[in-house]
Length: 483
Image (cartoon, rainbow, N blue to C red; front, top):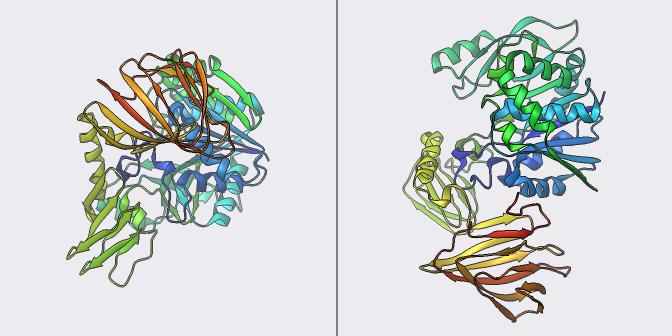
């Protein structure tokens, strides 16, 4: 029984701002042990029996960050595959596109195990056992979802009602009877007390032909454009895997709808595996805080903090010391360029801050001060009227695109490592404490030919210093202006 795990890496995670941002989404969030949610999901998927390939569905803009995370966590999986979405169209389109890719590579009866990238599961043995049960039912053509046995009457989760009798004798798979959207507290209490409802975990197992047939039957407004977007996709193969970049014009026509609404709530072929996995969807800072042990006063701290007369608070700091005096039931999350302070019982409302930043066109909703790129990182050190200073780190063997800026000049000073630089018609090499000046309008490129990181300081001057003032002519990562 060959299973292809499909990890869905969408979602900005607006309730986890300021750590989660549009260009650094929720699955990339690092937990206290240093692993990201995506890396934990990847490692969990790799432990499923008979896995020879893992497919990830992600946005084109976060492809290289996602790939780096997976390469770091790779536990010997032979193949890494990527489906790149040109825009977000919700889980029905993402799963449909993945199903076409898996079917084309492995056949109509190939089994897909669909996993959100941003969930946490503590009991790996129980997870593997649930997957085995689901796969046996999926082999017969059933659409199988995973239901988490509730530990409390939560109002933030959807519920699934299941039939008393299992699908077959000795099986743990039951017929799904009804989907219940996020209920009010009284109804949630009744559902939990009844014993036949589980939380909808958003994890699935099915054959490619089964899910594609149900998508065509119940959601042709998703199935048809997604099929064409895969058919017209740009495909590439490398030593460590493959990539399918969906056609933007076709994919944009797909209805923006979840797989639950599109298929699961409409099909009569849905079954559920009730299970206890130590599961959490890590949906807010409140749920993140519960992963850290509390001290005698109920405080949970990640980073360095000094607390005086403080109780029931969560503090996360990426570097600075946080001091708190005389407060109760507060969440504090500090990053290099943004600080969140929220009442603990209002953690769900952090998304309102992100919405306001987005309406104001404040880049803090989208970018961190340190921004990851395929070639390395850049960090904005200081900026003001007509100037900006950056610290640029280029990985060994990596290079920036051959590019040009209309509105700004740049001065590059090498701090450590060595640099090969295209500056107009010249090719120059720089060592530490050497520099070059690049006038506006000059084509230029930065290359690290060495075996250690190249670190340099960039000083920009000009009337406009936005990141969109860039024209790419050549790029090893496929990001030319034509693309």
